[in-house]
Image (cartoon, rainbow, N blue to C red; front, side):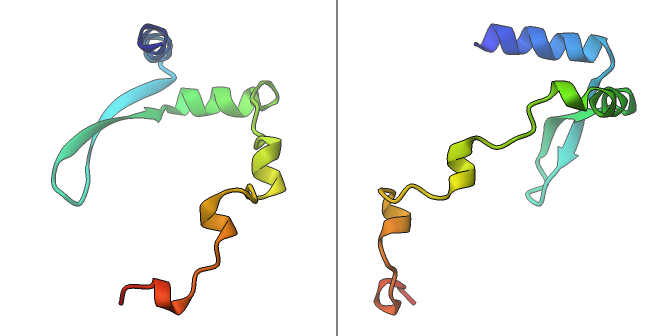
Length: 81
């Protein structure tokens, strides 16, 4: 999987659709992030119909009733402060 990702990102960089930038967060530690270039944004806008921009039906229908976080009622006694 990592090889496929590296190959895909390399292709996007060579096509000048994305670029790597260093970003500083609140901890003053720079981290590299990928950003769409203007050319990349133009491609995304021109090809919106090719992209799957819909949420999966499970996410649209709501939370899973068997999910503990959603199936258990939280009371004031559960809050530690």
